[in-house]
Length: 419
Image 1 (cartoon, one colour):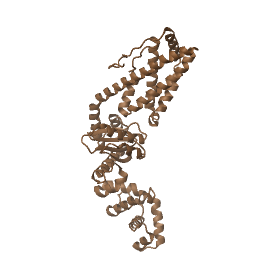
Image 2 (image 1 turned 135 degrees about the vertical axis):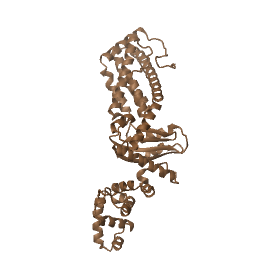
Image 3 (image 1 turned 180 degrees about the vertical axis):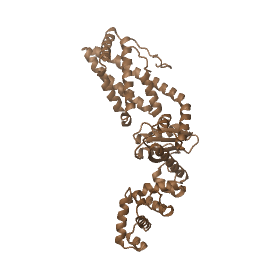
Image 4 (image 1 turned 135 degrees about the horizontal axis):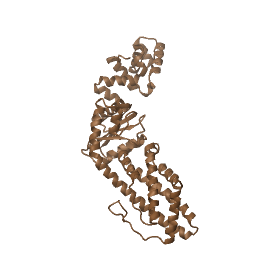
């Protein structure tokens, strides 16, 4: 039975026979003299069991390796001194680092998966080693019974101790962490003169890269945090990220940023929004501190519209509601940004090309009707449309509504001075 404290093991069982103890001590000495016999297999198994995003994150992958090796060494040293007896859980610096990583990344399940994968690899290696130290099948069976029972108990106790550390770390960091992050976030979102390096250090999130922002909330107030966190984890996994930044502005809302070069597939994320009332507004992707701010503001705009829409949509992206946001927002600066993103080089082209394309879309993409409306020969219209299409950043057929709105905005407010 495991005790309440993980500082030492409260398990007890009868010691192995003197012969089995000697065999175990001999095997342990071989492992400690040549740890690479175990390291490579345990490393490979632990990282293979992890998500691709964790395996691709050098610092986190190295923390997993260090943890696996520390656990092996701890177990071996304990069995060298007292072969076959219960081993106290390992709460060394390596496992404390893993606990902190879990708090920062929010992947509790990752820890269980990696520990058990390393454990299984160790058992396979110990099986091979048991046959090496003794030719007697009865001794091998008894030795493996002792080894497996000890390893399984040790891993369970160590996991329990690490999860205890995780909870303690969360309690200690929660208030200070949230206060400092909110202060820093307000500076960044407000455009204050704070460097990306300093802000990133206080947020514990790198700002000099591309970001995707989202807002997850519940229509109930307050709400349990678990359904919101599940939605955040689903978005992080869809984007291949292990470093989401999550801020809690209210008991029923999470603000989220995560590193992403593009909008990820959202099918699994939609499935994760299973709890009643949980919704997600996904903003745009932006680079650097300016992109960090813009991505969040786009998520805010999408959330505002989702609250107003009668359909009760559970998930929407800013790209999906952008036209409505611009049509109802009255924000000229954002409208100009939309025009630039949507029209690309067509913004600075001849006004005649833009007007031809605007009328063409207004006339239902009918070339003959466009020619009549502009009192221009049809062949000239076709030529202008070909030139206009070539200046757009995306094919016209993919975003006809956005292009039409952008052209209407240009007609009303003009283009920026830089164009």
